[in-house]
Image 1 (cartoon, one colour):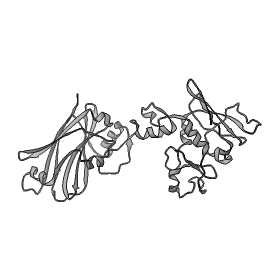
Image 2 (tube, helix red, strand yellow):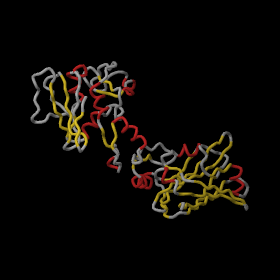
Image 3 (cartoon, helix red, strand yellow):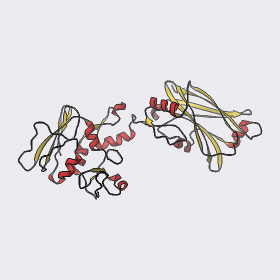
Image 4 (tube, helix red, strand yellow):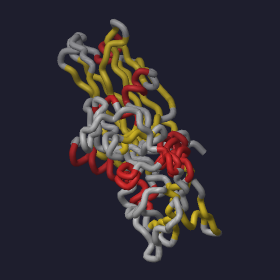
Length: 335
């Protein structure tokens, strides 16, 4: 395969193929095109044309009489090419090896077992036929990050693009609500609205907090998670969590803070937590963790204020039959 480039990057694609009457093409950026040379052995008359469903011929393109037809492909947007490289099963971008059925429908190799070796489109048996033409397209093009609409401006070769997107700082955040398998993902403003409206989490303005936790029967400790509140502080949002779980055989309570943003930004802040009673207190100081880390990952790393049940009952006072903990704290910005 061959690419034609100009001062603005890729300017054209030509496909050399022995298949006559090629009628379909795929779309790319306005004013640009790709040039692709496909050996005769890579062309399956039904397969290639079926796979390249978004390709269109330029108005002046005609099939030449020599053995290989020369086709200039005009690409109107990146959408068609992204769709072309999208697996119909997992909807992720396909990486080589890319498989195709006898009818030319493509699928990523990792999804083959998920469809029990049958094409999800026509139900033909898949086998191990590779779509070499599409693999060559994937190896030769450069595409913008799929999170471009969220602010990412990076452009990468296709293979590096997929790796970049796994760690792109503009990729959506998963819902940080603890105690549920919420599948919502989005940017921070969208997630704050989601937490307030759908999970009924309180939003507080300010950099200090004072929360009281009461449990009538502290001897029944089950794994439980709570997001107590979301704080807006220094123009950023933070999630305060409180959890009860067994650390080995010992019941413990844990409080910690997560930052709604990237880890690199979280490192600009510090926070402290304090719990006490009867003239004693425990204090924790640390750096909030990014919500890129799940609440379970933070909990399992013990990165927060941990209170063993006996100590919690001592702080509670009284006859030790009821848990009454007051957790206070503050957030500040490092200079």
